Figure (cartoon, rainbow, N blue to C red):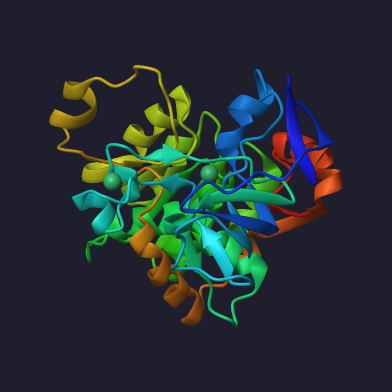
Amino acid sequence: MKLLEMTGDATSRVIEADPPQPSPGEVLIETARSAICGSEMKTYRGKGMAGGNTGHEAVGTVVELGKSVTELSHGQRVGVSAVVGCGDCVECDRGQYTWCKSARSRSQMHAEQFAIHARACSPLPDDLPWDEAALLTGDGMGVPWHTAKKIDRADIETIVVMGLGPIGLGNVLMQAHLGRRVIGVDIIDYRVDVARRLGADVTLKADEALIERIMDLTGGEGADVVIDCAGQRGSVENSFLAVRRGGIVVFNGESMEEMLAPSRDFNRREIWAVGCWYYFMSEVPEMFALWREGLDVARMITHQFPLAAAPEAFALFDKGQTGKVLLRP
Ligand SMILES: [Zn+2]
Ligand SMILES: [Zn+2]
């Protein structure tokens, strides 16, 4: 089968590999779509991954059942959660794999086939197309929905989304759908344009005048919520400058740097901080329901490539000249 290999320093190639064997409890999936996620860029631009890739948002058809799999059948269409819980703890019972202490993350999904545990698979409704399914069962829309549930307060009107990569764009689409006034911020024109098409009321370039403009747009008070999707020092600093007194800063972007000062950033202005990582397996049916009620997730997709052209897809994504990108093995 064909598999994308990340060869490091922002290069990749498609190689031939043996299909993986499903272990007991696992299934083999024939990939229909795999989506590119911003979180893959660290590995892609850095060391790469010998013999494989960081693909973790995919949908496909079950083509082989490992030992003791009874909950899925041959030919079933499924979406997968790349975070797989132990299946044997309170959190797993609740479908909260990301809170399971023994959870593992799976990848290698930019391939014609991949193996994953059956309990990480969500059967897809028959009328849900592959494109939409790839977004709804992965972190593409999973993170924005998980985020939306944490900021479900009636007094929230204006939301700033800092950073308009795929997760930022997903937040724009989700929050506009929920009736919030959305201000989208990025440095790349292409992404700002996509955000406007997805329902952002206002889009701003992240320059020196950014905070002044946000204050002008919010009566001098700041936004009720700022969702940081960039995880950069500048975007985190701007998030605290752009939020109103008593407002909420949500962290979607990952950052390992220490850059916050509790007194300055939280105490004196009574800011709430919310961390969001991935989504709960139990939330997938809620995402299907959002699609049924009109959340048009396919609008996030700006490009599709055959798996054979995945190296071009990654190069384009890396330049920030895309919204959500799907690969079609
Ligand atoms: Zn992801
Ligand atoms: Zn568990």
